[in-house]
Length: 373
Image (tube, rainbow, N blue to C red; front, side, top):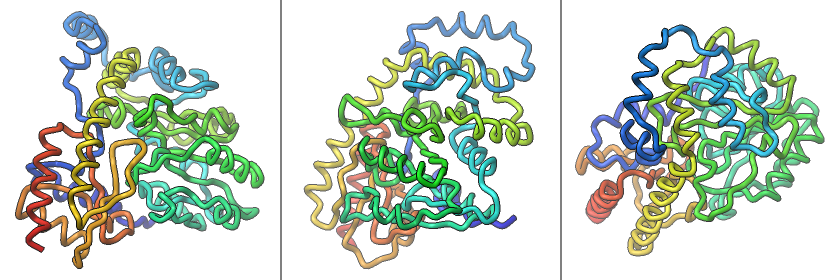
């Protein structure tokens, strides 16, 4: 099997450790174990004293019952039996896609988005159809264009809400329209929802798994809950057929997730209100800082993100985005992700949910560098 190079991950792997000001990071500023237990109101020492008596065997095969119960609470109509844990959201995306997609299937994916959603189906022999999200349309999907892409072989529609890299958020009416389009073809809708809950408002959109009986929700504790080091994600779906295929294939590449990872993820989700309050404050304050910076920088513009931790910054500079970012890193230590990683040019993905001081310093370096071009 051949697969396209994963552009974002290659860029991060090759360059992230060189960064002094990492404004490419997409997770909300990570928490320490001490901070996690403080936010949760739990005794860290008691937790680990208890855990130290446990034998480190395989965990509960489909996910710890307590954790699946907490994950189910993130949805309106999902039960713990509708959830299976995975090695991060990247593991969840891959597992769902290779469980459901067969050669000759038609798969529709929005773009730009996380590359897994289109490169993995294509590698399995699917006929890929791209629904381009356009800047001039605020990166919202054109529903008529989507309808025109659907045919009798359409097996799956892949979306990402909130969107990475743009920060665009599909409203509920758009999600419901996508569901009706998918239902007309008896197709699944897979929605990568790893930035769900990080809205600039108090409300957030319903999950695709609640809106559609063949909806597949992908989630994790990495982005929203600041715990990427746990490598813990999940698939949630009411589709018995999809879950059957997922569990069948999961036996080959997962078996179970780590018992320590799942135990700590349970602590986090039991304290989700405290973690979300912390992280919403970070993204709101940092987005205000970024928005003020963009307004002052005449060569930069963007579609202001509605949700999540990322945005696409457009720059009036006659230089390829990868060269721009490489030089920026080498000359200033500031680290961005080139738009070329998302098949976009004259732009860069910025992650604005890092430590506020790091964001301020990174933006200052970006300003200095751009003035020299």
